[in-house]
Each structure stands twice: as C-alpha cells, then as structure tokens.
Amino acid sequence: GAVVSQHPSRVICKSGTSVKIECRSLDFQATTMFWYRQFPKQSLMLMATSNEGSKATYEQGVEKDKFLINHASLTLSTLTVTSAHPEDSSFYICSARDGGVGDLKQYFGPGTRLTVT
Amino acid sequence: GQQVMQIPQYQHVQEGEDFTTYCNSSTTLSNIQWYKQRPGGHPVFLIQLVKSGEVKKQKRLTFQFGEAKKNSSLHITATQTTDVGTYFCAARKNAGGTSYGKLTFGQGTILTVHP
Image (cartoon, rainbow over all chains, first blue to last red; front, side, top):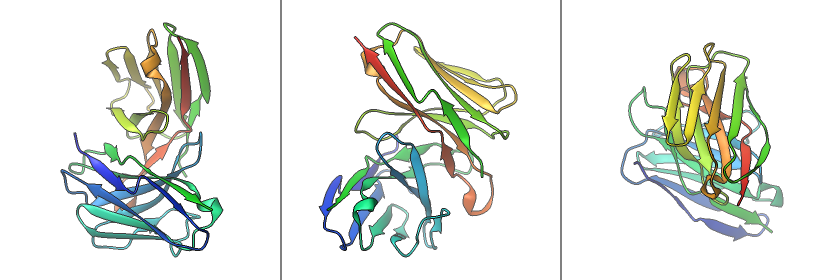
C-alpha cells in the first residue's frame, strides 16, 4: 500500500519559536494532502487541505498565518507552526490520497508529537 | 456543517466478547470509511462502504452501511487483545471544488480488551 512519512516524529520547542513538519508521499504522487490535529483521546480535526501548486484551504477557526502550509511538489507538504505556544502542543498528522477522483482512501503519516514548553 | 456522531465513546470487553461501534449522520452520506488507530499510532484505513445496505467482512470484522446511507456500524466477533485501539468512522464532505476528498471523522470508540 501507499506510504506516507512524516518528520520529525517528535519535537519539543520553546514557546515563541517556529516548528516545521514535513509530510512526504513515498511511492505515489499526491496532489492533495490533509493536515489534522489530534488532542489526547479525541478525534482527528482537519486543519487544512494542502493543494500542490496553490494555496492551502483552511478550516474554520484555523489561523492561516499561524499554521503555514506549503505544498511545493507532488510528494511533499510542510506545516510550519509559527510562534508556538503551549496550547499548540498536540499530535499533528498528515494524510494523502492515492489514486484518481473516485478513490477517497487516505493514507496517514505516522504523526508528529509537538510539545511546546 | 456535516457531523458524524459515533457511539459509544468507550467500550471495555473481555477477550472473546463481541464489540460494536455505531456511526450516525443527519444527512445522507456518499460513502463512509472506517479507520483503526492503535495507541500511540496513526489511523490506518480499514474499509470503505459506498452502496446502500452494503455489508463487508474482513475476518472477524463486519462493516455495514445503512439502507438510508445515514448510519454505519463496525462489529468485531470474539475480540482479541490485538483489537485494542480507537476505531473511527469517517465520511466525505460535499463533493466538488476544494472540499472534494475532505473527511469528517466521528469521535471514535476506544476499545480495550481484557485478557
């Protein structure tokens, strides 16, 4: 099956700094990738849809200037958490779709656990 | 917006007992997907249901899509300790435009299995 990688798997940063998370589709091209955030024992909340070569589409309530998304190639999307604060500590997961219009199956990356001190 | 309600939130069973989680939507769904997330892991795709009344089986797992395409269930027969994890249903948001392919996840059901 399709493989999605994420880097780093864990990161601890100080409040006020920025953190970049990479999401890569290893064996397929993904024109669309999705970024989710998951708090402990809660569901996945979609933050934004990352479209290759165009601006990301953010969900309501997600600050686009705080969570910068870049999808520069068909295999890489990055999420940068700018000026991180402790409340940004969470599990960030990306996913990508493999296949044509009819295939909505999503493959998830292993996630990045962000801790802001 | 579209919401998918999933129950129960938690389920504790003895090994060998059956387990069922349910998803309900107030609107008709195009399709529904199920994912499993092990503790500390990421969601893994299990199955996608598309047709009204569809039933699919994967070994001890049985997935159903309601006739009205507004509800779905996942049933595990004779649970094993390897079944531990959180099970999520996910439904596609409205088709078209930049919304295409976006999934709305249910709250998830956390399953624990006591040996």
